[in-house]
Amino acid sequence: MEKIKIGFIDDSAQMTKMYEDYFAKEPEFTVIGCAANGAEGLKLIQQEKPDIVLLDIVMPELDGFGVLERLKSLPYRPKVIIVSALSQENFINMALRGGADYYMIKPFDFPALKGRVLETVSPVRSGAVGVPMILSDYRAAEPIAKYSKNRSLEEKISNIFITVGIPAHIKGYQFLREAIKMAIDNPEIINCITKKLYPSIAQKFETSSSKVERAIRHAIEVAWNRGKIENINSLFGVRVYTNNEKPTNGEFIALVADKMLIEGA
Image (cartoon, rainbow, N blue to C red; front, top):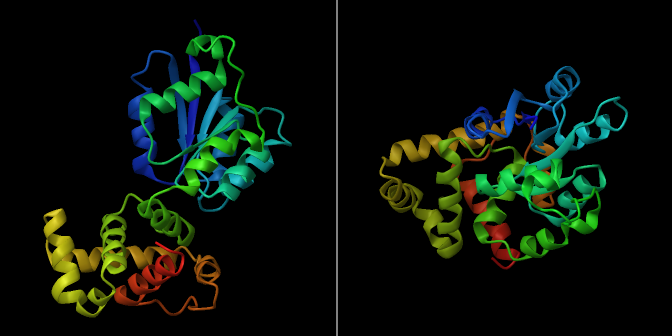
């Protein structure tokens, strides 16, 4: 049986390597390549003509929504599964209405992802004979939307990080998420950030307080360097910052924690 040609479009090198390592070992697949942004992804699709691509949404130059829109006017279009940490219902609906064949939320289980890929490309190969293909219809998002409404606090925080441009693969991502959870549970800890918050996180992750502080600062700097200041201001509903000013670690943690508390976290 002819192998399924699969490609990956994601700006996280760590993520694309995980994709490659997994699917290269699966006998049903041939990995045709990876792209770090939407523009490169479109070139990869036209040159290699994969049967299916795994596509992230938040990327530089051209995001996943832009890729879906451009594919409509191209002579060759593969099947597309969106794999994203964004779990809000509006993002899911927008992607499926835009032409995605399925939407999968990070983090995910690789065998489950493989099953979705097989179902999307060929129900016969997946053993899903008689089961309808997942269509480019926003109604297909209903089961995911129900999950989205019940998502955990961690997922809500992750969605904020994705929106403001903090990538999941850097150390500060985990430290910052833990700090926000602690600030939600105990708002007073924000006044003891050096004496209590950093040491508590350091102990949990078996590192030092200074490394926690530096990693969180780096995560915030990455978001500012990506230039998503408008996303940040829109998220908090007011014009909080400009390109030339960055919040301190404590300010950013308090800002996100306050938003979560206001929303009933």
